[in-house]
Structure formats: structure tokens, C-alpha cells
Length: 319
Image (cartoon, rainbow, N blue to C red; front, side, top):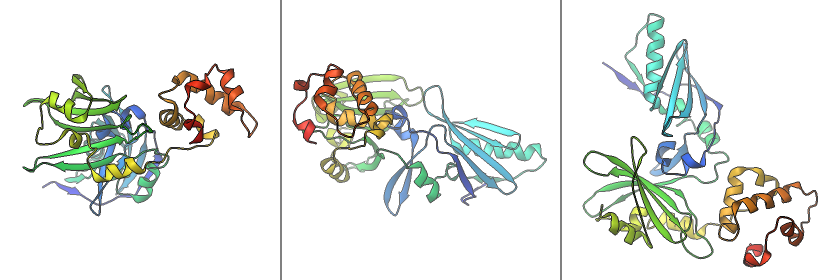
């Protein structure tokens, strides 16, 4: 009889890996975060690309590294002695590599290992390191309609700008597209246009795209899951999400931190996205980071890279 072992073996994080905007904050976000329930609260822990762990199981060492496959789903490769195995779930990779190792040394075991701890999930010290330098942690919650249909919605980007709209907001959930195909419903708001893109869950191929002027109107087009409101499906009706959006402070950073690509993107999105191009902003950042003075004269700095100061509202300089 096979049994799944919940024991946590000693695990070390050998390489923390990378947070990748396209993976962790795009349509595939639900694949790249692990959902953990902590005293009734859903907490998302990132599965980082290129992260590497090492776990001691009895007399064996099992190493796991995370990469992306050809459609950008996580791919897990486990090594144990001279055996290795690659799979799209960590449990399959770990158990297959371990069993192959035992076969090579003439042993056998009916034990089935729980895969997530081999990524450091449930190890608080590793979870803390995986969450280090993560600009925004995904918010996950379940929504229910009156007849108890449930959806798990992943909110990957929460932004509310000075125009008091949801520009930059992103969320997604997985549900049936039809009787044969499961789909990722990827929802975004940009320039007051609410868009839902549907992707085949297995192939990541775009099935269909819908856009309209509000959450409710775009979901009326789709004509699915009508027991939920469009706002609920997007995730903006959740009380916790509302609290985060309405209380969200504008990001700040030091000039030195602007060399970090994620900080660079966040500052651009928060302040200048609607006023100048990203290439001009990049030139501006280069000017700032190259200066040795602690006092910066914005007029001359902007003139050096051909930015028209009149194109940027004065309130931007007051934030």
C-alpha cells in the first residue's frame, strides 16, 4: 500500500531564483504561486524561476530546480544520486527521481513524498526568503454565488491611479471554456478599457478576447457565469481587495534602486505612464543615476533628453 508522507525533511534553498513579471503577474500567475492556508488566511508564496533546493531524505539528497517549459508553465527537475526526472508537478518529479534512485541501488519503497516541502513551502525560513524583494504579492480569494458555485480568483496587480480608475489592474481564474476545454480567464484594465482574454489551459493558446467599457458589460458579452456579477469575477468587489486599492500608497525609491527593473517599471506605471514614453523615461533614469550631485535640477535634466515639462502635470512633482 502506498502512503503519502507529510513529514518535512531538512531542506535548504540553494538558489532563490527570479520573479519574472510575465510569469508571476501575467495570465499564468496561478501556476507560479503556491497557495498556502495560514489560520484561515490564503497566502501566496512565489514559485521562482531558476530556484534550486536541496532536501535530505534518509540517506539520499534530492535536488530540485524550477524552469519554464515551452508554454511558460513551471517545469520541475529532480536529481537523486545518478537518477533524475523532469515533470510539470514537483511531486511527480521528486517521487520519480527518488524511486529511480532506489531501483539503481537495489532498494524499493512504497513511500510517496509530498512535493511542496521540497520547494521550501511550509518551511518558514525559506518562504520568507522566497518573498524577499517581491514588490507585490498575489491576492487570492474564493467567490461564491447564491447556488454555491465557487471560483478562485488571483489578483496579480492592484493599482489605483490619480484619475480614480482601475488602470493597470490584473486578475485571473481557471474555469471551463466548454465541456472539453478548461481555460484561463485573464482580466485586465487599461485606459478604462476592461478586457478578458481566454487561454487554453493546456496549450496557452488564445481562444478569444473581449473588451468593453466596464466589468459588467464585458462579461455580458462573454455570457458565461452569469450568477456572478462582472465586478465580482474581476475581483474588485472583494473587501480585502478594496481595502488594498483604496489605501495603496504611491511607490517611492532611491535613485540607486531605479536600476532594479521591477522598481523601474513600478515608478513609471505609477507616475509617468500616461505622459511620456518608456524609452524617454529610461533616458531620464540614466541621467539621474549618472549624476554625482544630491541636488537635481529637473529643468536642465529634462531638456538634456528632450522632455517637454509642460506635458507632465505639476501634481506629479508634488508626490
